Length: 295
Image (tube, rainbow, N blue to C red):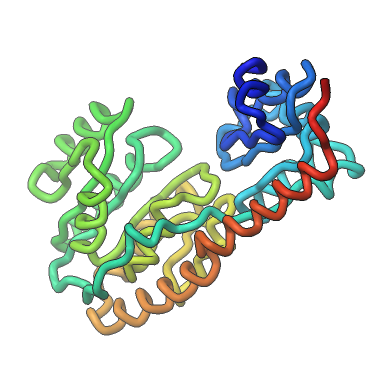
């Protein structure tokens, strides 16, 4: 890696994750390579900070990017106070191409969508449980699980157990355009995650003017305003999830439109790709001035 960086004339290198890629650029710097920085998204870096050597990576870096204030606070836990000024908050930017579509009103159909890898941290199992409770109350709606993953067979077994085969559909992996269409075809996005950083799909749904029902974990509450741009619930609570889903399904299209407009305005303001990229550009320039390449 180091010879390649030198042949390229790199004066600074940025790793997009705090895991293996940050390890490589740190070692390259130690061998005389350019200064480096990295972005921490979570939740992997928050789950195993000591195993991943997050503290050492921060100490040796020019700067570190956290995508939320919550992420910044977690990095503060693993380095001395003297290194705190290195930690900068730069939000993930939205790709305008994803949400550059004409505003679509919320559908009359009672449909919810959940987008994410089918894994333990996304909470799809309790989502199926909540769906079964609502079905038992006679509330009829469709739930679309967009994605695939290691828990697919377990989810399929739970769907069969609760006789929800006609109401719950798993799409598997689909394209970005298809994800957009599934979000637009739903009344809202439901993401009952146990662990997150700040999910891009939450930002995408808000940009498409769809309310989001999700958990108050990590950086999510920094973006979603309760009962204004979405619903926040305690993680792991089937009771709270069931009640919030019922409320979302009971709202009129006009009420959902107003929530969706509020969500759109907030996410576009906080996650402009141009504004956030400009913040990174400033940090890169400052690093090149302060940390010249060695050797």
